[in-house]
Amino acid sequence: MASDKGLRITWLGHATVLIRTAKGTNILIDPWIQNPKYPKGFELPSAIHYILLTHGHGDHMGDAVPVAKKHGSTAVAIYELSDYIAKQGVEKTVGMNLGGTVKLEDVAVTMVDAKHSSGAQDANGTHYVGVAAGYVLTPDEGPVLYHAGDTCVFGDMRLIGELYNPEIAMLPIGGHFTMDPKEAAMAAKLLGSKTVLPIHWGTFPMLTGTPQDLASQVDTNVKVEHWAPGDTL
Ligand code: NI
Ligand code: MN
Image (cartoon, rainbow, N blue to C red; front, side, top):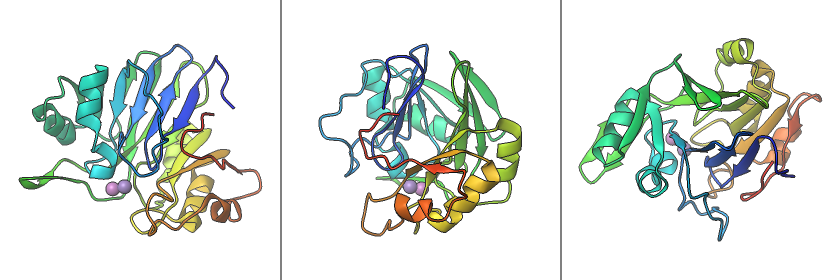
């Protein structure tokens, strides 16, 4: 489990993941603090330096604005989504796009492809906020991480693997809106990742994929982490 030094990854349920780098940079991916599996009583660090958003759906950016305001975060997203949340009152945003890399303190963050829809829904309807994305995080110290966001498996995951060599892949496995375990097992193969951290499962009854199901389908050299919301690696 967690040690005091080095990079730490905490799953907060659904696709919400908190990363603390060796240098102490706090990065929160897809903040949905009100998700049904959010670990009860878990306190976010007072400073969350960066929020990364994969797309505009409420189960990924639903709490981005309040968290950014409360924790002084800079929000990183595809250009149109960064513009959308800036208009909702987030003061510090970085708008980027697929293939781009930004250096955030001690982590290089690359926005990569994902195959999924992306629209932001509010009282005024559904808004175009760019396309869905994933992120590769390359820290100065520690393993390369990949958070796939919401996506199906796609052949160009092989390119992500070749270019960035993500050692640890956070992959959605619940099915229905994203990959299921069969597709996620192929994703792990294409990426060449040695460890898979399953996300986007178990939140609702319709997300039926499980880590056990994934573990039975991945290659023998791939480790599937059986983590629960609130666990830190
Ligand atoms: Ni989505
Ligand atoms: Mn989702």
